[in-house]
Length: 132
Image 1: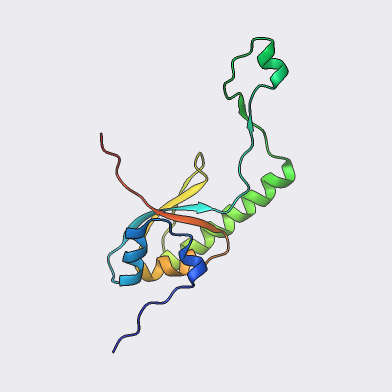
Image 2: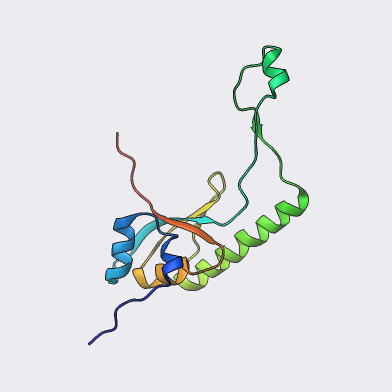
C-alpha cells in the first residue's frame, strides 16, 4: 500500500489556498502552476506626513522607501538561494517577477511539498489566469 504524502503542518500554512492544499495532499504527477512569494521584509511605503497634508498635499502614496544597501544584499542573497533551490528541485529555471518579489513556475505535488518546506518560502499560491 503506498504511503500518504506527508508535509509538515507549519509548512502547509504557507499554502493559503484550500484547493492547492488538496492537490498537494492528493499527490499525482500533473504539474501545477504556482507563484512562490519569497520571505523578504515588507517594502516600506512613503505617504505624506500630517504636516504635508495640512499644507494641502494629497493623501496619496508617494512611493517606496529605498532599502539600505545592506538590506538589498540580504534580499538579493535570499532571492538567489531560493532560485537555486527551485532550480535544483524542478530541474528548470523559474521565472522571477521582480515587482511582486516572487517566482512563478510549474511543479508536481511532490516537488511543491519540498518547496513549501524551504526556509525562504513565505507562501505558495495557485497561478491563475485572470478573467474579465
